[in-house]
Amino acid sequence: MTSLITAGAVAVAGLLAPPATAGAAGADGVLVRTIADSPVPVERVRVHAGSRTPVEIDPAAAAGIASGTRVRLRGGTVTPLSSGGASAFGITGTHHVTVVPVYWATTSVPSGQPTTAQLKTSAQALDGYWNAATAGKIRVAVAKVTAWKKIASPASGRCVDIDALETAAKRISGSIGTSGRDHLIIYFPQVSGCGWSGLATLGAGMSGDMVMWLNGSSHLQTIGHEFGHNLGLRHSNGAACYNNAAHQVQVPLSLHCDVVGYDDEYDIMGSRATGYLSAVHLGELGLLPSSASRRLVKTSTVTLAPVSARSGLRQVVVPMGRRTYHLEYRTAVGLDAGVDDEYGPGAGVIVRYIDLSLNVPYENWGETQLVTFSPASERVALAAGESWSGLGMSFAVKAASSTGATVTITQPADVTAPTVNPKPRAVLRTGTVSTTVVPVQVQWGLRDTHEITGLQLARRLGGSTAAPSFVKLATWERGRAVTATANRSNTWLIKATDEVGNTGVTSGAATKVTLNKRPSKTYKGKWKTAKAASYLGGSEQVTKAKNASARFTVTTRSIGWIATKDKTRGKAAVYIDGKKVATINLYKSSRKTKQLVFTRSWSKPGKHTITIVNLSKKTVGVDGLVHLS
Image (cartoon, rainbow, N blue to C red; front, top):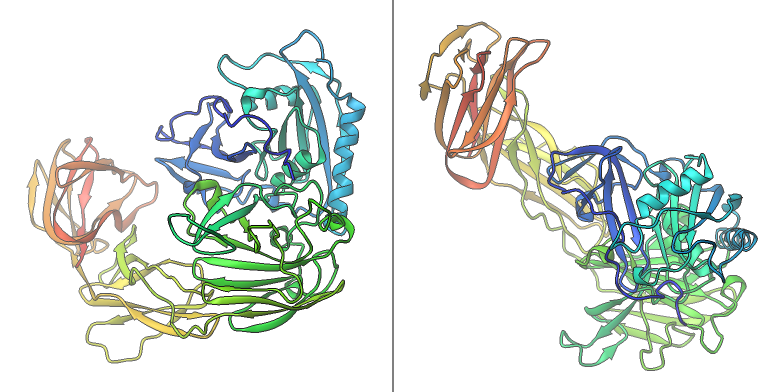
């Protein structure tokens, strides 16, 4: 099947206006994800901050943050400021589409372009498909189609400036809703140099609505695919697998697989114009009940209902290492009526997988890869009586009918507890110190063949023989803000349980927390001792002299400076091993003593020097130092 999604050349340069440098001073704005559907899909993530040029960032830096979320960007770190995004409103219900056709290369609308009535018909076709594919949970209504309008040409050297197009289209259309179910379709005559037929925001755009840009294509395959991106869906791809790393012989499935973009002929997020959504995508949209999906962690026989059914078990998920395999059953009915045609992919049990080890950005965001069980004949599905085995597992279709397929899934027994690596260890964090406790962040890593279902953290103090008291954590946590006991040895333990029931306890190395309440190292300039019961050791070394400094050398892997913050305090520069690393502002309208105001950590202990320099004639103090072994 030829995909309309990938029509055009592969060039995608000039897709966007030149982005600002990601390492700029920083920006508060709206994070927007877009996907250009070229032969090699291009995902871009940018932060739109008012009238400033959008700042482009690495998609990995914004992992897990929905498009349309208000964020803060500082030095490449992205922090959400709101829950934002279209998903915050929910996607079920009626979506409203506004269509704006524009042109710029000719004096009048180019010949051969669709009329506004035809564009309306194309947009209305969205409702027919998504209504059937989601059992009426998602409907689409056309709010309006504006008249063709000539706009300014893109800047020289760019195929299309999508930001300028969006601005112009909204000026033409007027207000677009921001309910999380409002879409703007910008249609323009094909620009062959762009290399993509459609482009869309992956969720909400910079104004809270969702946007599609159609490069001369208004086919349902294109517009329906881009609408899916607006809903947050990623691509359905194929997999070309080989017997070894040299790719000598193609096989159905192995650990040596290439991603074949869009090569899923069952799903509109692949290369099929119509067809029921995959169970994976239904689940991502929240439209697959928990009773319709089952996760298997041991050898089992199940009966899969067709994806077209409105009830029954429609997905089986099999975790194996860094992959999860997703099984579903397709029959030639409804939207899938053509799957058994001469050029159809075939009815039967199909398997997709999501590979978390892929490192190509657009492939590494939960996209599915469809397994072809008969590469020579290009037959994808397993029919009744057919099976496949390898990679320590097997799939066997025992029986199949119009109402269901009975499948046996064999997988090896897992008797291994989750692996905790790196082991739990603490680093200092900012916060309030006392004579007995210090704020720390405990961090760890965790991996398992299966899903983690239980996670707990405990601490053991040096010399204690008492059983550790574990605290329950969320299974996704890989760090927790806690406190450590000062001037004692602290050891943290992680207890992890996987879905099979394997449990293990992993202990980190003992950490000695040294709290120095009256550090007496090298002070330069005019310093004095201020005494008060509120200070950590009853006194604090303070200075009002500009450029006065205090220097301390210790062997440590994590060091922190303790000081007072109030309205009389100023700024200080912090140097580590002779290099300036931070400027700390000690001003605070209300007085707070015993504050851990600066920390720095390393992967292993070493000899380090911290130097604190007063940058003004306001007060800067040293109430104490803390460091970890």
